[in-house]
Length: 226
Ligand SMILES: Nc1nc2c(ncn2[C@@H]2O[C@H](COP(=O)(O)OP(=O)(O)OP(=O)(O)O)[C@@H](O)[C@H]2O)c(=O)[nH]1
Ligand SMILES: [Mg+2]
Image (tube, rainbow, N blue to C red; front, side):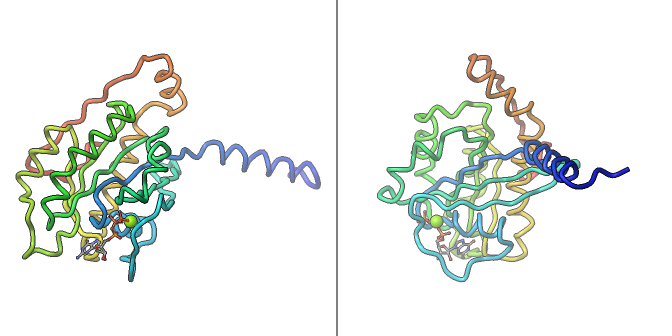
């Protein structure tokens, strides 16, 4: 017999609380120079479209998407950060706190945004993001084929040297939407494959961190290792 009345309400509450507690939340931050397309990429992933217009991000914008991986619902919480120093300086500490994965973005049509990656990686290191936190590199605006300044081979070498996967894509071109999706899904898969985050965080506190090795198939730079 089904419980009814207050008992049913209590049971339902228990079930939803249990379900709530079981949904893991992955915090993924998106970092890079102003104007490289961080807002557009996160909007494409979470909102399924290219925004009609954007303004420089101030502080941070949060976007969320629930994905299902091997039967488990996972909430991907995307932190769309500000590229302009004046709009980010009060927030930087918050960006990196308890982050689960990092996406570094550059604009394939702007060499400076690629050379500045060193600075963004340095900032990440200064904030003690552990080496096992997965990081990927994204070259955006590939639709602007005539204006490309950063050759794929150079970007791939850089990604390899920093143990990152490279994705070259476009937030604007609808044909690339699957590729944008796979950036986030690849990270979510990797995070899911890691041990329980709670357990991992306990290990981190005890200084017993585990370095995960990720390999990249040079012939298939967009392959997901999971
Ligand atoms: N052609 C093309 N333009 C893009 C693409 N992605 C973004 N843009 C344009 O680039 C400009 C900047 O995009 P945003 O997403 O606002 O850049 P951002 O990195 O969030 O910049 P900040 O918030 O200042 O850090 C906008 O005019 C977008 O329309 C893309 O894939 N292709
Ligand atoms: Mg932005």
